[in-house]
Image 1 (spheres, rainbow, N blue to C red):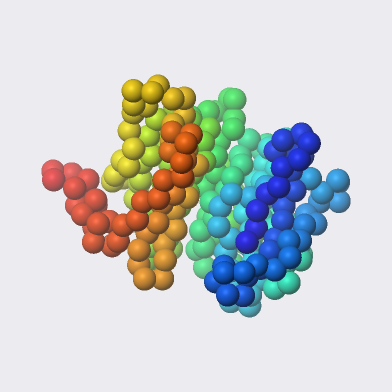
Image 2 (image 1 turned 90 degrees about the horizontal axis):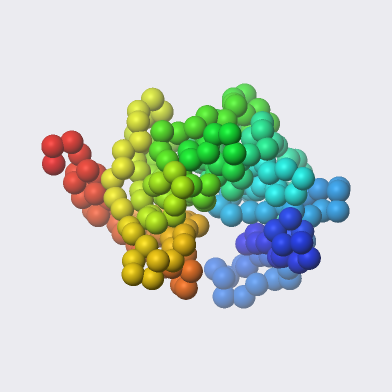
Length: 250
């Protein structure tokens, strides 16, 4: 488990921590602070799930919010020590990367867009020769209001689900899009939440996190009206129904 602890200075003064459970989360070992930066070792944050390699190494998508905002990867060994860092975003305007594998040495990343010059879109980048070499940031056609996104891979590396706020400036919904093929467009297939409701709460739905379990089920979590964490779960049959309902002419 990797998590952030916040101290003086808010997110900019935060620290990244790690602890391990050997019994599926019933009990936990001691918390250890990760050493990710020689400069005060602060402002390294994490939001989305890591990738675990066959040799046990962990690739952790992280980001910074101190003296510039940018996304990076931390490579950890089995003991949780930071071996390498790889910068994803070439500019300081992309944070909270969601990382999906392409093969054993390549990946894609979807990121929250903090840009003032190109706002309202989700950033995207893909690794080239290695995880140390990433393409320049590209904007997806999907709108997004400088908010967190989450993604999972389905049966093949280029079949993906993306959950996000589907608006260029407001977090008034939680929507899901589907893509099959690296050259195909994203298709909006379902909307889990819509509208502020009678309360008129600012940004009522935010920070989605989607995971796919080994039994083929999907679990979506997000902040609900700044009061609760909402959990929605569905299976492949429900996903197929969403895809069929969203198909042209259906």
